[in-house]
Image (cartoon, rainbow, N blue to C red; front, side, top):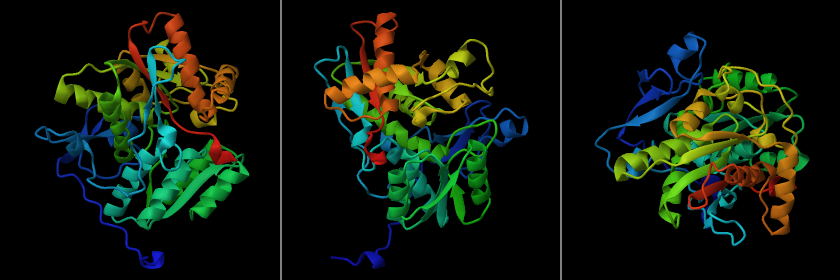
Length: 373
């Protein structure tokens, strides 16, 4: 058996089809690089927006529309699409089956590949748990250092997981302090900050977000019928934007329709924006135990994923999530409370007639609840 101390991580190869980064909001294009505050032009104007990857139009294969040909090999992706006998008209994409137990592995794999290929020695992220564990694992696989800026309320077991993975864990009482830590680390030439450091928030690193497109591609291959709706939990829209981008690329290459995305949030953020509030606004409220999708801001990318797909924002509070969390546990499913919100949202969308009885829907169960044990 090869000595793990002498293991050398593979080189990560950038796709030759990747040609630029483009602003979601103003469409300005930039050379492929790192813009931790999002679009420089929008940042200067105080209306921050994230960037996304643009590929050569001649790239006719889906795999050509990913920024890296290879990533640290921990086995992410290929998660099952479950048909549950008690859930009419829907399937469940079980992202808890990823190596560290959440969809964040897809982001971490691509972000770490980019950091290593770009010559960084370390990565840094602000996280309430799932993203930090994922990034720490993939950084370790690639031989990079990893700093995770978390909240002081982080469960002891999660702290231990991060330490075991070799992460430098730093804890803070407020989001402002946590973002400030990542911003300070990202200013160092050896460290790539992969989570948001801008105010107003823009979202995480666009190269990492590209990893979420595979969720859409897998759903299209696995679904028993044409997918008309996708229901997923959201915070600042990284997952929603990546999934939307994936379906848009499928549509461009195969002519398939883009499903409507229904974004589930614990307090009215996107819902408030749809009612006329500014995307850059502050939205107070109590997210309860829905830590993974908590927070008082939203982003341009979340709003564009929703409106671009003709979707909706669904507010599911802590109490409603608890009801479905208990129902799911009684049926043997171990998804965390933030994942349980999509079941409550689906029930409401069906009752309100937004999703028709004959329209197949996919619910994204993003994580299991074991990491805090």
